[in-house]
Length: 183
Image (tube, rainbow, N blue to C red; front, side):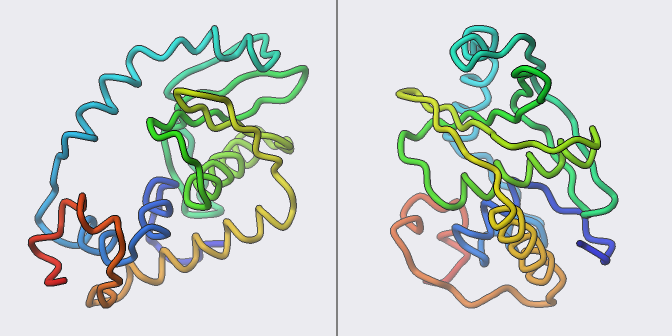
């Protein structure tokens, strides 16, 4: 649990997993880039057929752009959609890429934790929707623990006075901070 005053979003945790330095630069400096991918993503999100997606996973009701906050975890975010399957509300995250990895699963798990904390009911499954398929994410105790540990690591990075050292990767090519990172 986040006992500090730093409020973190699941998106920030995803960025941390991809590049801790980019996270720090994004939230601790004046430079707030808007990339083509961000503009494209916003346009795509406005057109997502949430009712159709909910129907494919057996959902009876869907809400989009759900604002969630947990004082307990120091976590806040806007979930793409929340779908009711039987008696359980489950988070849905939409991703433009087709390959889903650890950062997206942890991000979606944090949204599940936010839903649990808000509704006071367990969430056993979440979904990551891509242009080619719907990924089912089983929300287990170990996945929750891992997500909360990574949340704490994210807070620690944000509370440091200096950014983490660069960690060159293939993501550097499209990073909005590549000109300021000195890699």
